[in-house]
Structure formats: C-alpha cells, structure tokens
Image 1 (cartoon, rainbow, N blue to C red):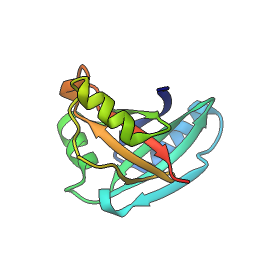
Image 2: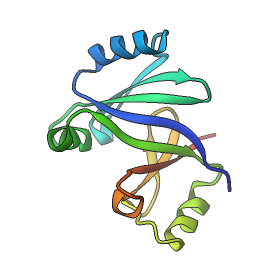
Image 3: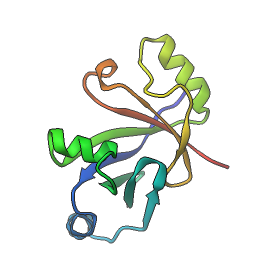
Length: 134
C-alpha cells in the first residue's frame, strides 16, 4: 500500500483565465485539457514535479464543481492519491472508517479510474483515489 500524491484539484470559474494564471505561476503551459461529460466538468492539467495540478471548470449548473464554487468559491477542491489497486485501497479505507461517496470507481480524467471519500471522514478534505487504466 503506497499512496502517492497524484494531483491537487482546484475548482475554477474560468478555465481559460485560470490556465493563463497557472502557466505564469508554474512557468509552463498546461499539457492537457479534457472534458468529462459524466461529471459535467472541463479539466486542465499542469505537471509540477512528481505531482500535477488539475483545474476543474463546471460545464453545467448541476456539476459538483458548480455547486462547490457556489457554496465555497474557487479554490482547492480535492487531493488525489495514485494507487496500484483501487479496489483493495477502497476496501482498506472503508474498513478503517472512511466513507465512500460511490460504491464503485468510475472513469475520470487523465485515463484514470477514480473514487472519492467524503470530507467528513477525512478532516474536511475531499480525498480521491485514482488508478491509471492500462
């Protein structure tokens, strides 16, 4: 069991403006943009050392990102950890008292299977596990 910080997800209102801001901050442009239709979100990724920064913009008012920004404003949305076996890690963390938001992982951005744990079970932090799809 090794959890490696894979990315930090940041909810943004304007992906293009945020891309410019983070390109200036990190000194390089994003390397990938992707839309995840099922989650009503557009994403943009910046590589930053071993980890990434993922910017998330809602594409519909019912998006979790739109609801997050409406309630809390722009900012850090989640921490994502890369795992080798998402099912085993889900089971381990549930047995340790963490609360899953969905019972099964689903396809996310950047060729990953993903699942999320409720912030109430992780000191107020939305935690994502992700596994690269082979």
